[in-house]
Length: 406
Ligand SMILES: Nc1nc2c(c(=O)[nH]1)N[C@H]1C(S)=C(S)[C@@H](COP(=O)(O)O)O[C@H]1N2
Ligand SMILES: [Mo]
Image (tube, rainbow, N blue to C red; front, side):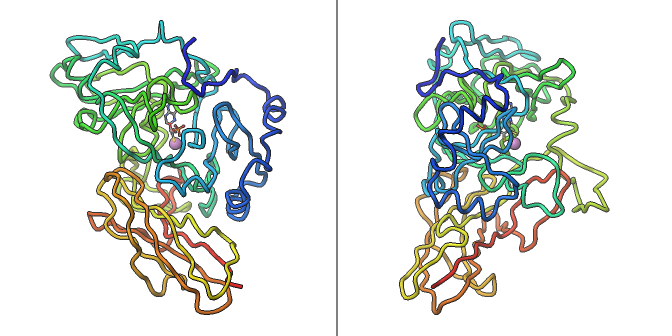
């Protein structure tokens, strides 16, 4: 069997008890105090199990079957999220735990003149491209929705930024030679439901989007093979779009002459199409979720931190959007009454996290509500009140972090 470097030996049909036993060594003690405290202060979950899955640091388990793991907050101090701390989200119970590269193939078929069947080596012989891009779950921060919505109760750790390397999807589609009237392209991975009645996780992109040069079939993440849990051996990377389209352990690419009507496009990952909605007044028209919206976070200091009076405090954080690029970041230390510009860090590309920094000298002792907001190159910014939707998707309210100057 071929495995990525950090590919562990593991079988996924574990009972919850086995899983817990397996994870005990990694328990809470394995987490830095800071990374932990933010979540315990802020995370909505009643229990906070931290487990060390194969190839991963100890991470908060949002779900154990299929595994959904949240990135510990301190890893956002880095521009690129380390592979071993990158969040994990699967929907179906039977996820790939090993891949034999001698038999594994990526197939491109449907409305094409030349169907393809490529090995990983075939892909690696094609021209490679790298791009830094944020992968964020549509349901990132869902746990803070009020009223609560069903689904994984994520804190803010269902996002990560990585340098992805692979073959542009458009090169594969050109090689396969699309027939006329191709409308959508579907993507399917190696994972499956426990029963045939569970719809397979298949997502679709419109052909014009699938042909954008930044969309990759990636086999490397931060210069290393993808971890098994993040989609070894290849995954789709759709910069600017929510992660639901970033199909992991990709094996089937299918070109359709019509719109795809599968469950995961028609029944899930939908947002109100025009108007807002509320629990009492659900939108009549919904549409598949698309590009990410502008967000920004304070990474340090963390919630409930105690800061000494008389010393400048380094504020440090990140911002990102759906691919316009971040133009401005501002912070407030008085709960949003007044705002000051932060200094932007290195520009790693318009799909990447953008670091920001500022210095603040607290004038007196007491509690402070720190806030941050970003503006992208299209002038879009973040709302002051959360925008509710039934799926708990696309949250981008201005966040507040309370700290205490003592
Ligand atoms: N094959 C497959 N790909 C998938 C999914 C899945 O369930 N199966 N989930 C999607 C969703 S909703 C998310 S948020 C991202 C998570 O990517 P990650 O696990 O690498 O962080 O994978 C996407 N790709
Ligand atoms: Mo997701």
